[in-house]
Image 1 (cartoon, rainbow, N blue to C red):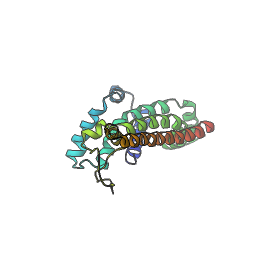
Image 2: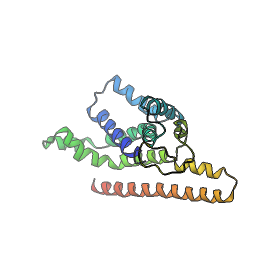
Image 3: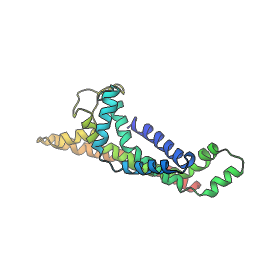
Image 4: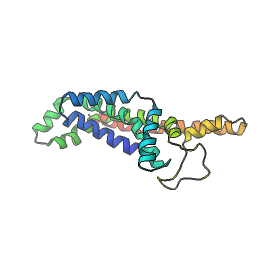
Length: 211
């Protein structure tokens, strides 16, 4: 998630800003917007195959943390772009016009006016997308991430395993001890999700009060 979150949020919000604020309104941009929306509904295993082709084989990253992070970023990128576009589009035009009328440049208007006003919507979409990435296993299986490893990864190029894959493996074992460990893993996963949502809610409330 340390690879997925910055990669997907930076690329997603940047793409949304370009499409909404800089790109010309023509057939090409309409085609791109439509296809981004369609990609949000593509099964996750397809993104796993894309990650296997590009990151694992073409770029020779193997089944590393970096390859898996980039693959998961591809999976949630369309969701973040669509959410960020809707949030930016919802900012009243009066705020843009007032900023430009006071002498601010387009970039200053985006950074100081539009993005702070759009942060609640952007955060909501980003948290939903990251929550999906946390629980996904199909892309990781496709790129060859092992279910169990007996060591801790020391860097982004090391092999690793993910908590949902571990939970699946533990819950399928007949021994009672593994059932208890699987339940503990589920609690940890839920705690991470609740923490992420709580942080997003605090930031969202802060900016909603401001604007």
